[in-house]
Amino acid sequence: MLTRHLTFMTRQHLKLIASVFFSSTLLCPLSGDAITFDLKNKAKPKIKISVGEGGNVNEVAFSVPASQLGTGTVITGSPPVEITLEIQATAANPLTGFLTVNSLSHPLTIDSGSGNTIPFSEISWTASEGVIPSGVFSETLAQPVISFPSSRGIEDVHTFHYKNTRAIEAGTYEGRVIYTWSVP
Image 1 (cartoon, helix red, strand yellow):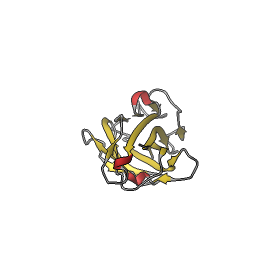
Image 2 (cartoon, helix red, strand yellow):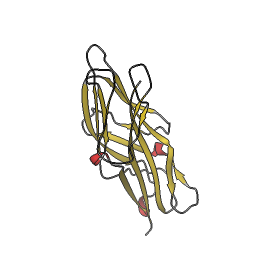
Image 3 (cartoon, helix red, strand yellow):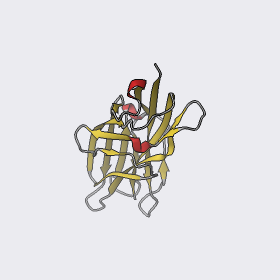
Image 4 (cartoon, one colour):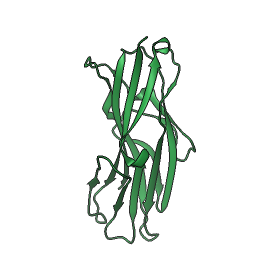
């Protein structure tokens, strides 16, 4: 019995768009703890993002048994991924943060080298608390997920699901989504 495996990794970015208030434009760690960035020339402004355990690149895996392949039986991935966002600024100089996700740059591609892919639009997520809303990847570079003003912190846990609507070649498909928390 052949099983199809889908895996995608989450990665976090923290992006600051240059303006007179900011001294840096981009911070992108490869792994480690949550990212915190202190904004210059403001009293205690800060933005922080953590996607997954410890802010490391996390892997969500789905196993599709051959008997269920392409039947539309939704396959739930594991583990769930915790997302934490914070934004701080003074009342005199408020900020608004925007969470986007890039599911276009690194598609789900099979390891056989055949070039077969699964569109990320086949993957959805549900939010445990609904604070960071449920959705479906739209295969764009900057899909909006949520925005909110300072000073505030939110967190939620997302569980991912594969729609399983197509017959796919046996093997392991891997891809990556990138979450970006930005303050324009």
